[in-house]
Image (cartoon, rainbow, N blue to C red; front, side, top):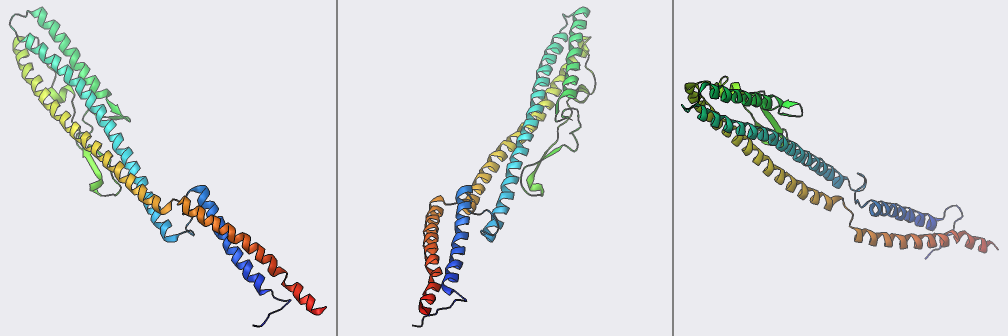
Length: 278
């Protein structure tokens, strides 16, 4: 086997230095993976894995925002439902007043007093209708009766990711067609029918709001489950396997130490040429 002695080129040292450079790069990668907990910290670490992880991240972020959208929708519908409950309580009181006024034993003074309370209750219904708002949107005045409101509850731009609801007006004018008066027995009897019809209508509105609220609750649970599963799948791609990474790190440290020792030995090769010249 021929011995290659050259003063212009130390092939052994060059080869060892190249290997050392590769080991040092691997060590730097291990440092990053161990310190961040992420196996993929840039596209250079794993181009295909990085691309997949970014797509998964976008989907998880969109799912989490969809959860927030649905929860905001639930809060909005709870606001509307709570106000409707108050109006329903008022209607029950109005019905009692109308039944009392329809009795022939009430004199004109009694009817006047009962009607005064009836007018105050109707004013309160209108106050609730105009003051019930969510994020500055008035909910019960009929502004949502035609176009309604649409909740974005999933990650794509199709109608499958949307849930819409319309909310009818529950003002006195909408419920009764006008103001109710119980200043006479006959008017009180008419009021009974109008109020009971209004209770039926309002109950239907409440049932509609409640049904959509239930849908949103189920949607939130499904979205959270989907996001959690997708995040777990993403973690298998991006998260560092700490045991494996530390094992590789230890091996790279040994290779670095051996490489440095061998580089020191290779650097002494030109000394052998000098001995030949002595």
